[in-house]
Image (cartoon, rainbow, N blue to C red; front, side):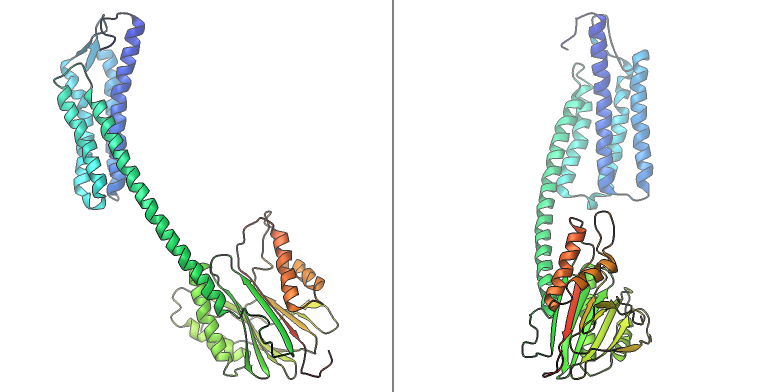
Length: 428
C-alpha cells in the first residue's frame, strides 16, 4: 500500500520480493507450528509419515509461489505497482489450511498428552490464522495471516516460556531434595564405617587407620575392622561393582553379612564362601563385590586371609620394606553360587605393617589418561614406611592427588593400614 502508484523497476522488484517472502514465511511458520504439535503429540511410528506430509505441503506452497512469479495465478502488480488478486488467489492459502487442519487433528487426537495451557495457546495459533484467511478474502489490501500468525506465535512462546520456567523451578526443587538425600546418604554411609581414630584406644598391641573418599556422593567401596574376641581382629577391604546408590546399597548388605559371619569365629575362606552364597540368592542385577578378608591372631601374630578377586595386599615385615603379596585370587563374591576360596597365612612378627586398598588407588588417572599404578603406589609406601598407619595413608592420598592434579576422580579411593605391635611386653 505504501508503494502503490510509485512506478519503477526497483520499486517493483522490492515489492514483489517482499510479498514473496511474506507468503513464504507464513508457510514456514505454520510448518514450525505443525512440527511443535507433532513433537508434543508424539504419535509414534506415524510421526515420520506425518512430517513427510507437512514437508510435501510446504514444498507445494513454495513451488506455487515461484510459479506465480511467471504465471500471475495468485496475484500480480501492474505498471503502477498496485497489488491485484487473480481468481486463483484463494488457492494460495489452501496449503496453509491443509497444514492447519492436520495440526488440529493432531491436537484433538492426542490432547491427553499436551498441557492444557499449552493446548489453549496452540488452539489460538491454529484458529487465528484461519480467521485471518477468511478476513483477507474480503479485504484485498492487507495480509492478515502474517499479523495473526505473529500475534498467536508470540502468545504461544510466552506460554511455553512460562511452562518451562515452572518446570525448571520444580526440577530445581527436586534437585535440591535429591542433593539433601544424597548428603544424608553420604553421612549415613560414612557413619557405618569405623571412622573414629584411634579405634581401640585401650589396645596397645596394634594400630590401625583407614579412609574412604567416594567418587560420587555415595560409593561401593568399604573397609571394616572389628574385634571378634580379645585375641582376634577381623579386617575387610572390598569394592562393589558399579557406582552410586545401587553400589552403596549392595555395599551395605555385603558389609553386614561379612561382619556377622566373621563374628561367629569362622575362618576367612568360610566367611567368603557363606557370604558369596547369600549374595548370589536373588541377585537379579548381577552385581558383585571383590573382598579381601583377614583375621589376625593378636596373641601370635598369625594372619589368616582369603582373597575374592581383590587387589594384592602390601606387607612390610619388621626391619624390611613394603612388598606386594601375590596371594591366590578366588572368584568375586556374588559371581557364582558354590564358589570355593583358598586361605593362606602370614606371620606378622612384631613391627610389620599391612596395607590394603581398592583399585581406585592404582587406577587413579591423570589428564593424560595415565594410571597411578602399583609401582608408584609401592614407591609412595616405601617413602613413608617408617611412619604411623595414619601418616602412611595420608602420604598415599597426597601422592595420588599430586599425580591426577585437576583430572576428575572416577573411582572410590579406599585404604587401610595396620601396624602389628605385638602382645604387651614383646620387643618390636
